[in-house]
Image (cartoon, rainbow, N blue to C red; front, side):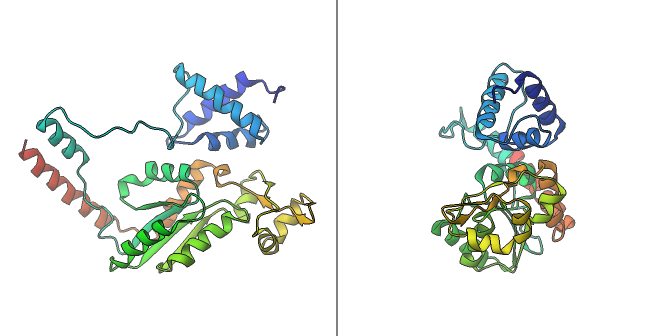
Length: 283
């Protein structure tokens, strides 16, 4: 890390962030710099990148990065009733996905990336599932209830890491909820890793799913052989964050478009506009 000349790295990092018309996370930026061989894929450079970009943002010299984890928790309040009505008009919306032919859901393994999905697809009104690792009983129950009460078939579009747990988290959630008419995993896959030349890391040999994962993906483990430790072969690991954000966005969008009815969406927007006009008349 001491050999990295950070001034040109931060300059390039700024260029990368500004090149996107969508939000990106610090980890996604990190992997863009790794792919350009400007920094190594290690914890030290990642933390230094975090520190330097934060300092530059505080000086107003670096664009904002997506950070879902930190915000002010404050009770909602208004100066008066007129202010409250103005807020309601601004916030008012119908369920824009209610009249779609299927009940679409977007799932992702990591909470930070779920925040990006909110930014990207909030206008469509599609519910998003941030699993944050293996799902919880309460989330499973909530999902099952929502889908059971909906007459439409439910379709899950999902993305996660390519590692022993990442490949199993989606399977576990799908099997446990057992309420999906169709599931589509858009990434990560071995083909995407090869096509995009994504960095392949050492996984956790102590992961109880490692043996099965290695057996299911022999080619990539033969190509990236990290040896063994304690008598257990070390599996590979590739993070979803390493995928170009624009490509991740497009993969989700392509899957959504397989089911999306544009006319139904436009009708929902018209209903919403009429409702907003009614609220304006109350002012």
